[in-house]
Image (cartoon, rainbow, N blue to C red):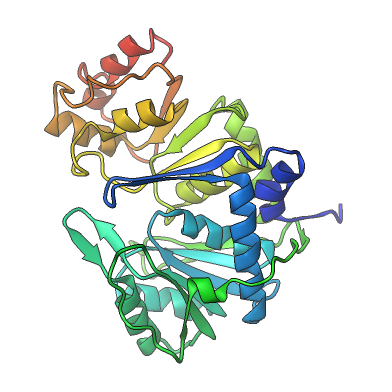
Length: 343
């Protein structure tokens, strides 16, 4: 009773203090940009603490809100953890959401700062986030103090608005320590889809959420600290918050961030490639992903060349899994055969 904690400290600092800083925290695999990045806990600590310093310089304090509008890149997690480091509350909005949807969330959350990328990269097209952000801020009744804009390499960037925008590299400042908060203080606000009336902002308290995530990573998913865990989701969903960012990092494991599709970036063998290339121990995905692979490549022609020997478990959740997908000869039996019935 009366104890305090910080989500960022538990996700990064304590691993660095335990001499585990050289371990890879994040693997960002992006076939849409033909890049693979490995970010260690040491690197994450440096990037997060410096961005937190920049947020503090801009006036962000404990309890303030920060909206994050980015694709599935390490900088999105860096922004989340930097916000949490200050005891502030992050609200992640799906990258590429229309200006009207972003405006609704800005007006409700009333963020002191917005952190965004200049664009998102989809198959055969680029979505210019910065233009969408400028439109959303212009129509919003609530104005942030500043927008911090991360520029993706080698991609043309729209002009910054000197009134609102500051470049990511110019926002970084002297590293700051974690701010202790109460267990029932909010960690983040995440909005519902809006299928029933307006989107509703759901708050998650820090203490119980972190304890639950630590418990589930091992007890339910069987993950060990030396494992590579892949949640094929998005940070705009609660599953992405829980099991791309906080869960695996709290546990000290390695989390894969896949910026791609099951089939079009560039082929339906990518799930198998990710498992093989990064030696994934367990994958968490939705049935739709496997339905897509089964539909476009029913004989798993693209996936046969990859090894799945590292894989121990597949977790399917998030929607109804039809029987055809569950017992698909081409997909499930491929996993079972390669892993010798360990799935």
